Amino acid sequence: MALGFPLFRSAPMFALSSRQRRRVLFAALVSDAVFPLAITGATAAVPDVTAQLPGASALGPWIVLAYNGLFAAALLLAGVTADRMARTRFFAVGNVVVAATGLLSVLAPNLLSLVALRAVAGVGAAMGAAGGSSMVLAVYPPEERRRVYGYAGAVLGSSLALGPIVAQALMAIGGWPLVFVAPGAVAAIAALATLGLPGLRSPDVSDDFDLAGAVLFGVTVAAVVTALGMGFGTGVPWWGPGGLILVAAASATGLIRVERRAAGTAAGHNRPVRLRSHRRHPPGDQPSCRPSRRGRGYRALSWADRRRPGRASAPLRALPARRGGRRAVQHDADEP
Figure 1 (tube, rainbow, N blue to C red):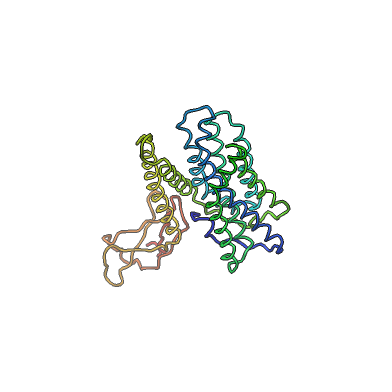
Figure 2: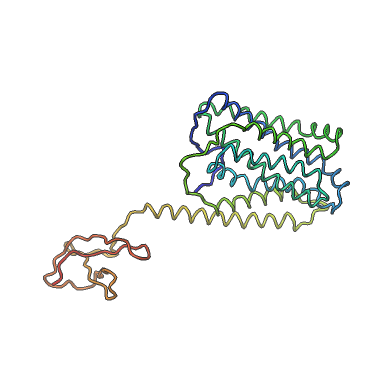
């Protein structure tokens, strides 16, 4: 199984120069600043966007909810995909998606189009976050990662704290379109910072990937995040967040079942083959086998079968695996 947040998985080390490693860190930190700025800026711009763009006013909160929900849903799959592709290329593509959707948001003809662009931007932001984390893990040794993640925490905290102030300043300068263009410009800088860097693609990629579990995990997180964003209150129909909570519960139940089944399958592959007897038998009495009537090898006789006179006991050996995954047991004694 491949479930696990990308920040906490081990990654192969790539030998890069100090200058290249600093470029990787710079690109990752710049990309980290986009997500908090995009959330806080869009939240501040929702009233103006709803008033100026045509469409149902109920779509206004979804400018933020679509971004957050798709980011949460795609983060795990993005992390696994980044580990299986060229990390810098994957990171650059995610930031290009954020930059393109930020520019297209200015040209959105209505609220529905803007919500769709924000959803795509959330996926791109997840690709950038997962790709940046994967790049850092691939080029920095474990003894230096604490310092690196300290930088990342400082950038995230500063972006969250300054986001509302920056958003109000941008709206005062250029209106709500600038709130979406500015994070896109920052993402474009992060993508340009990877030009000329190696792809950082792992030579050996494991095929042990639990796609069903990753999808169910993403659906669960997205439903919970969206339900909490909608909230329960005046103007919000109860069936909206209530239905999302039911979806989250159903997908979480399915996730538990899928993971238990996957764990049982993995344990079954390493389980030794045992020959059991359900009843004790007298000393010297050994199980015997005889050819099957259908010609599919040998079948074991029960302990209640009488032993034939003159039939000596012999050790048992396992035949090669047959259809159905079971192994046949053959007796080595000579037929009378």
